[in-house]
Image (cartoon, rainbow, N blue to C red):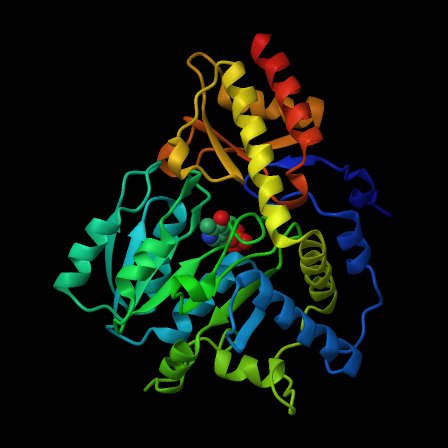
Length: 372
Ligand SMILES: *Cc1c(COP(=O)(O)O)cnc(C)c1O
C-alpha cells in the first residue's frame, strides 16, 4: 500500500486570492451523512439555500441557485444561457477576469466588444456611456471585485447607465459576495454569479447564480437550444424549482451542506457586521504594510477590502518570499497575474481569513522575511 498523502496535508493560513480559510463548522457540515438528491430532507436544504442566497445577494429573483462547479462555471452559465450566435456583448475589462469573460463570450459566437481600462484602475462610467450611446448591446458585463488587481469597479453607476435600456446587465461578484455589500436588485443586475471559496469561506466547488425575470424571459425566447446541456438553466430549474423536482444531474450533496452552513454563518453574524469586519481588517493590514514601507498598487478610493495588491519592493525576490511564507510559516499569499506577474503580491482577507490575528501573523512574518 502506498502512503496516504492526505495524512500529510496540514492546515495553512490562506491569505491569497482564494481559496480562503474554511470555518470549522463548514468542515463539520461537509461531513454530515450523504443523503439522496431527491430526499425530502435534502430538498428542504436546497430551498433554504435559495432563500439564504437571495438574502446575501439582496435580490427577489426567483431563479437563484448554486451551479455545480467553481466560479468560472457560474460565468459560463450566465453567458451560455443568454448568448445566441452574433449577439452583441460589451465587456468592461480591467483585469484577468474581464479577459476571461471576453474569451467565454467569444467562444459562444457572441460579437464581443470590450473596453479595456488600465489594470489597477477602475472602469470609468463616462467611457461606458459613450459606447452605449453608439450601439445597442444584448449584454453588458462587468466584474464587481477584480481579484487580479484588487480594484473595486463602480457597478452601481454602470447599472444606472443601463436602467431603462434593453441590455441585460451581467455582474461577476465571485470575490465580493460575503465580503462587501452586493445589492443585485438595486444595481439593476439581471444576471450575477459568484463562487464559494472567496468570501463565502467554503471550499471551491459551487457557484451561486441569479437571473432576473427579464433575463429568464430572454432565456425562454431563445431561438436555439442552450448549447451546453450541463449548465442549461431551463433544465436545472426543473430540479431546483417547483413540485416536480426532475432529476438532471446528481447534486453535489455535501458541498451544498457546506454552502448552507457558510450562508448560515454570514446571516448569523449579520451581513453588515461581516462587511465591517472585512473593512477593519483591511485597514489594519494596509497600515501595517505601510509601516513596513510597502506601497499599495490601487488608490484608496477603489481598493477592495478582501484583496490587497502590494507592490513588490525593488530588490526583493517575489517567488522566494512567497515560498518562505508558505514553507516556513505556512502562510499562503498570491502572486501577480498576467501583466502584474512579478510586480505585486495579492493578500487576501476573505471570509473567515479576515480576522485581526491573521493580519498580525502575516505582518510579523513578512517583516521578518523582508528584514532578512
Ligand atoms: C476566482 C474568480 C473567478 C473564477 O472562479 P473559479 O472558482 O476560479 O473558477 C471569476 N471571477 C473572479 C472575479 C474571481 O475572483
